[in-house]
Length: 552
Image 1 (cartoon, rainbow, N blue to C red):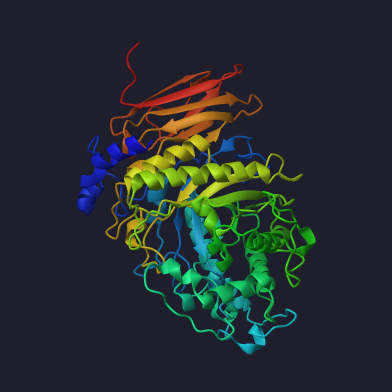
Image 2 (cartoon, rainbow, N blue to C red; image 1 turned 135 degrees about the horizontal axis):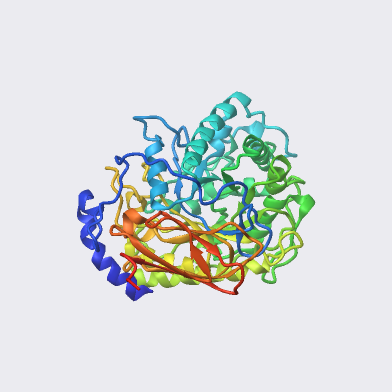
């Protein structure tokens, strides 16, 4: 895949010289839609309603079809710590954003929110009433009115995405815990550093993770050993969020904690921290087991009996919970998170390489990055079945909620091919660059002038959004626009297989769709290619190629 990616990168390189050329197709002269394009209202959705994760690698819709999600991350990391319609403001998220996402084929957005936005509180960092050692008690920082205002704006964005048939993953985002460490996430009242001041190290923002003050703050959260009951309050807020979105058919699920970190991970994989992390997810009353031969879990003594996952389930038993392994798992290092016998879990992984520029985040060596990303994806794929439990037989479903963060089409060509081969859904980091304190402008799919980067030609793909059977394989080439799908039909499922075809991006002169074992039932040139299984048969194959079908 790397060699093909290198060729593709060369074909696309000229497009990065200016915003106008970044929106033109190298192969066919296609002009891509931009944020300034007319808002296109979609027709009927390919997938709607609740999504299930009953165990095994796949997610399923209400018809029993395997569903695949492709999408983007949209996270605003400054106050007000959320995106919603606010024309003229840097946190504005508009119908033009949602429309463009849908036209590119994205059917999910991992939408950022923060604990500091939901419960900012009034106490300062290192407040003795909160940060002194002792049995956890209510820190008295929660305001229902503040919470309600924040969630109402969040609902506005969820509803806007739903208008365009896009699901939302609500992501409790953090990077380096708090603004004191040049990140975001936790409110200042939840920062306990034992009085150690924060020191800003030179270089890339992520170096702040290794500072002493940040390490102490993280430790007090994971150990839950201060009077402020940090985990208990975090869980309480999550329960309020889950209750607020209970029953919303366009919420795919919840991501409880973005990129969990402890300074102990600097040893490249730490079973002790992963035990703390699993206890954070389950609570002491639902303790799971470790994986890969790690010792039995021993939870910190003041951890809540019901961790964040049971708390969410108690308030919303239907939506998915996309729990993440530790931060270093994104680089392919071992993770010792094991089975948790709880429903609705989805193993939620990030995939990033280490050979990246400290300024832009772009790969310094595309081949090395592609190799590391493929290895990381393979290791997480092997972890998934090891997490099987009675409520998640075969291991939980899985999803790649972050990857990319690059303007390199070469790297994205490689990793999206690997993601297709693994038959796993994904959300790219990131939709836009919002002056991110922990990122760079090179990560965004949409540039400041509203035009798309050339990476859109890789990320906007022909792919199956719903499969009436069990997938054997699917693949798409951004250079040739040829797509293959092979699956075993499930004749108990009567809804069609639905394939998104990005006609504006890859098929300016139309496409030809051919199927064996099934019949194409959608109109020629439709963005949603529908294929109805034949009543009998053991295999369905679908081929999409650019241009008209050859005469027979």
